[in-house]
Image (tube, rainbow over all chains, first blue to last red; front, side, top):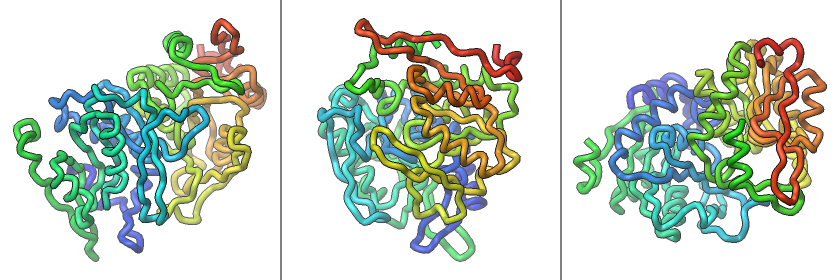
Length: 203
Length: 203
């Protein structure tokens, strides 16, 4: 998505450890109109999949998931990292390893809100090692829900998460794919083809 | 807002400690189309205030803030409870006491994203004691930004937060105001009048 790539080139900052700082428009302050367009692109790609629910992980996936849900007119479910007072014990639970915090976190979703009848579009702002995605897919598997697509904001294509998910047959669509951080700036790469079964709808 | 009140009556559950469980449509799963309408109502009330930014607090304020921002076409800034890797030290910081967790939490916002030129609409899903609001207002005060309105999803009117804010002159607009939890269900009450200086625009 050209507009997102341009925004990353112009406003993103590369911090030590190959961390891309985009909190000016993605994960602290949100560029509302850009997010709406990102949601529209997810809709173009996944509109024929019968999506019944958008699943994401708190915190920074929520606004992007909501922007997608605007197009699909389905509910957003955000998995929680901490079990809250109002969330009972009747939850699906998985674990997500955080490389930045170097520890495992539980993530949970209420069993009543994710069911075997759901066709789930997973949305997240970042994809690197794929840990959060694996946790979200695990929650869907526990519920017997079908993952019909994965929409990512920014994929670090030089890390293995996206490749691993695509090899497993998931249709991962990232709006910006970073090949590498070069001295002259961020270098982007193309989207891989959709899995064969989805190629007609994903063109 | 009748639709929200009906939804609370129908799907909300009252837990011990006067906790209202609405995670079926507000703070775990999100009713996307309802949120869009909630955002539209904030726009009707606050559209003449020259809003330049919507401010909220992670986690559960984000989607509602984004729904409001859709109407105003301004960025959302969500204050963070934990200082992340990409957030430097150049932040405004306040403290919010959590009654449910019985401890104080720091909340932070990057100084670059909240400035003296901002006219801020604060959005949050719940208002009870007003702790989160006070912290968000404190961040605005530190930045020299003007708080031009406060939009709340559900206000527990039997707790002092809303009254305190209104006495300070803030225009607090809550989409559902709960007077009490009665044995037969939730009892709602009317919205207080807007502060005098805003009465014309708030009708």
